[in-house]
Length: 144
Image (cartoon, rainbow, N blue to C red; front, side, top):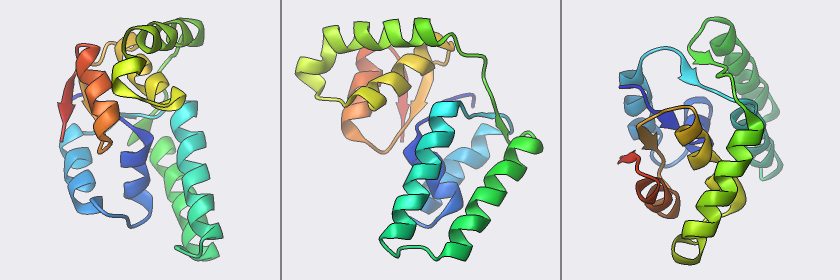
């Protein structure tokens, strides 16, 4: 399965959260080279830092998560897609204009769906209902 995974799913690879087991199963089935843009990296890092701030993970757990993320990039489990950011932002605005009044997605959620479409993915993985609704409206299959 070649699919685009939202950052919130990828976070579950590195720190325990609700749905971590389901996320791990979906990720395992996707194979290597999980798309991991700079947007993903920044969102995942920030999510882990926020967990550290809220004392949901220790400093050591956060550092281990960051180290594992870098190892996954180096070993090809995560891969950097070539992104035309101008095209991605244009698609984000198009999706917003067509669907935001119905779906109520935030900008970065819309950007993820736009990236999936611009990069040619046909499947979008997220646990966020609104984001999945937007992905469906954009013509993508969604999981879970």
